[in-house]
Amino acid sequence: MLFRSWTRGFVFILCLGLMPAICLAAYQHQGEQDAGVFVFVYPDKAGTKLDSCNLCHSGGQYVDSKGKTVNLGSCQWCHYTYGYDKHGDIQETLNPYGSDYLASGRSSEALRVIESLDSDKDGYPNKVEIAAVRFPGDPNDDPSKVNAPYRVFSRENLEKLPLRNQFMVMNASKSTDFYAEYTGVSMEYLLKQIVRVLPSATDIKVSAPDGFSQFHPLELVPDPLLYQVYGTYPKASYYYDQVADIAKNPDGWADYSAPSCAGRLDGDIIVNDKPLRMLLAFKRDGEYLTTGVLTPDNKLDGEGPFRVVPPQKEPGPPDQRSTATNQNVDWPYAANADHNAGFSTRSATIIKVEPLPPGTTDINTLEAGWDFVDKDKIVFYGAIDPSSTIKEKFNELITVIESLDAKVFKNQFLKSQLRLNVRNAKWFFAADQRKHAVNIVKGDILPRVDGCKLKGKSDANDWITDCNVQNQVYWAGNEILVLLDIH
Ligand SMILES: [Ca+2]
Ligand SMILES: [Ca+2]
Ligand SMILES: [Ca+2]
Ligand SMILES: [Ca+2]
Image (tube, rainbow, N blue to C red; front, side, top):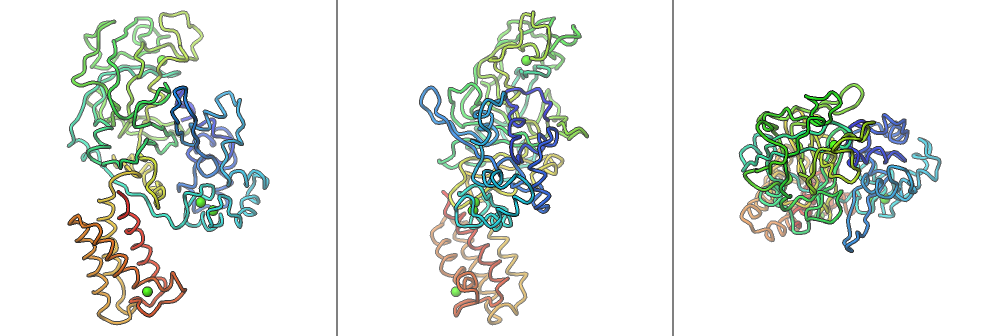
């Protein structure tokens, strides 16, 4: 993916300093060493959320020209502070764990040495955090946190929602520009009506399994590099030029071959049924998007099953490739042109709605990798309505209890009693009586399984005597409790 021609979206190459992880593909090409060191020392953490830029690099924020604070994820923050030209100080992008790693010699030995430290000072040593798949450089993530609420959708699910067709330009910096008609669901509709984002939500981070990721604020911000989720995008004209047309000129840079281009003339106003919006697209000119695959040289080929498509904020013509020697054309490469294609995540499988609700952490997105691409699935998680996750967790807990050997209970009746308590809590939650559900979890479930957690052995009012089983039920109940508190 390093060789995608997405200049402005191309932040990953810059995260190479230390142990990138979302930048996986990048470090493999650029001789980056640190991610490999981490996976060498912690082989079972390969592909987990720790195997990413975020392990050592932090996000950041800056105040724009209008006084508004803009939050950036680790890769875009790196780009902002360090720059494509490496003008900045890469160390400014390091989190406390990354700094400790660097200070200790930046080697596998260094990772071992800093295991006993609590780099981010959240009370949990690095070793304990890594074992629990929690970030050792982020004080807001620790082993007590539970997975954030999530929803998984298949393409079939999305096809049943109101769909939009958008004919638009995809303007790239280096690769071929093209016009096409994308079909999909408005991202705003999905977020508001289907996953129901919490009032606290501010932005989304879209990721693909090749390591590419993009940050989009929900509301419009003045920064031309940030494409907002909510609201409409301006109407555009159709720009046609024979010199640009790759079908007419071997040195051209724009592809006008899509069926939806037929009959259009240079200068025509592009009319869509509805105003342009950021789309979660799954079709292009009537065909399902070509499923993304990683080529042997680590490039992403294809764009499906889902592509997040932002229209241009400042409509303009497809401009010449940045790499072309002949810029003496009508539409030469313009660095400040709107290269929306570079901000369009191909084969998107993960949409994180930020900020994470209190008490929650990033879900382990390992499963939402290539497997999701192959199964036409996408996951939303973070600041979203937790209801469906809570229901699932109640069901899981009931299944766990049913599967337990009656011998781990203090007496033969307590297994069915514990199961009944969980079912009651679930019933109240489903009946929209969240408070009752919380009271049951707090008063009639957790106290029956908390001795081992509190004192290292089962206590007088515990129903389960075996500590391993107790802990399993306790943490499952605690997870439900944290999720019930999200609103
Ligand atoms: Ca820590
Ligand atoms: Ca931490
Ligand atoms: Ca272009
Ligand atoms: Ca107890």
